[in-house]
Length: 172
Image (cartoon, rainbow, N blue to C red; front, side):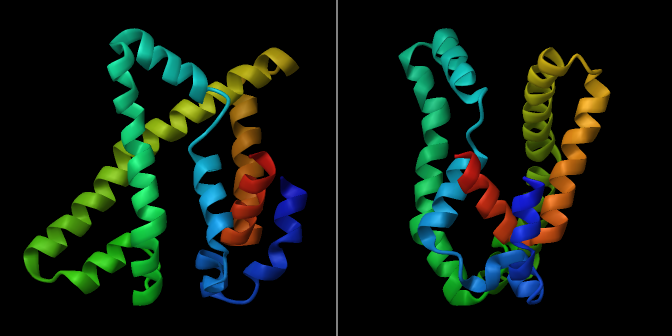
């Protein structure tokens, strides 16, 4: 992953637009694969099986709703964001809406996604991967977690969004 990150560094060095949004040149299919790879891990089939076992066949709707929102994001919102020239969905909200309700919505989305959602996902993925590597290597879990975060931080810091898309494509 680090070698892919360093290889993709040349794309990130072109400026902040290139670093954060790929200079608006990331092909739609690469962005789509990256989105799918980001939301899929070795533990995903186990999680889906657990949800269906606990809730019956109707439990599929718990995870299917993410698929529908992903499709809408890729084919509708991404085009609107691109046309508006924004970097984030919160920036898009700033353009589309104004006043106190818009300010509240931006704050709510930032807090809701940053705190509970990202913390749950990061914890889930980190614990899953660290348990697998702990069995393989015999190293203590805290060392594995530090190692994983170091690798991830290095390739993301060096390569920006192009590195993330490339490593997601490689892992998918």
